[in-house]
Amino acid sequence: MYAYENIEMSLNYIEQHLSEKIETEKLAEIACLSTFYYQRLFKRLVKRSVQEYIKLRRLAMVIAELNNSEERILDIALKYGFSDHANFTRAFKEVYHITPDEYRKNVPMLNTFDKVIWQCVTATKKGKKFCKHSKGIPETAIEEAFVESYRLLCDDNKDVLEEFLQRMDDTLSSSVVSKQLAKAEKEIGALEKKKSKLVDMRLEEIIDKETYESKYADLVSKQEQLVEERKKLQETSDNEKDIKKRLKEFKKTLEQNEVLDKFDRYVFESIVEKVIVGGLDENGNVDPAQLTFVYKTGLKNNVDGAKFKPQRKNARGRHRTEELCSHDSNEVDKMCSDSSNDTIGNR
Image 1: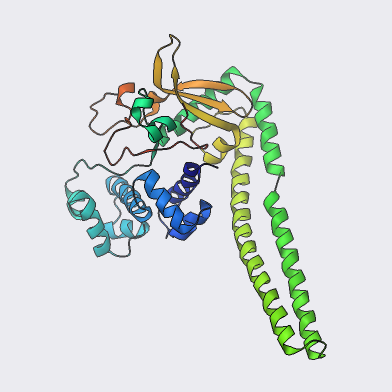
Image 2: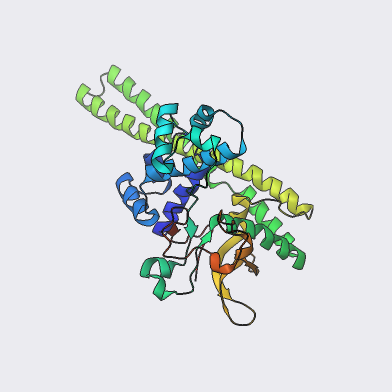
């Protein structure tokens, strides 16, 4: 797994838990990295510290709530993890230079901190001159384009549904985690029996105190490790159950020959092999906004990513390919990152 893939896994977790307490240690665990290395890698790729990124994303969500709801400002602040009104107001003012109350009374045009966008790996690592046509694509654009790509695919290839259905069955029937969980339970039980036997041996004076304490401590240590492993496996198992529930719903959608009405990450990951950002149009011209969805069935199709790019607040109706975020943008809401195998940006 590449470094940026590890970071993207944690970014996805952050997006799903913005209203909860997010520990850096947990994010490092998700990325399968040490906390120290995770923080360094995160800042190198995302250009922000972990906690700063989380704060800015929470404030962006707060802005959306202030614009679209009548909830009290304090309630909104608490919803997104700010401890009290003073703490929230201070953080809000540091970023936007006005208080939340002032913002709500007279809504100005603010530059909110959106999710990371995906960019050509070559341009990101070596510089734009090595991939001069590279344009950044917001992840939301790729998500919306996938829904359209899937619709087009099913319209053009009715038999592709059977392959997708088979993939759903394979995914739903497999459960590696449940086997690992059962194994951990069995090993914990075996260690408990060994501890009991060791106690009996000590009571019967078959072994001396020093030997007993040494072996007992060793068993306790192994058991504690297994209990911790079981806890993580249980969390993974619960998450797997949720994923399978959503996949069952998607399977039902497939069986009824219905189209997706909104993006679902689990569905996306189960049927898409990769997404290629950029390509050539039918006339052979470079099209940096072209999105090619490559499905695990081997089929693929192209979608115009420019149609799905969120319109800038100051765009005044313009919606062209040229407006896609460029690699050297310094705006806070147009951060560039490496690609991933989730919503991937390849060239």
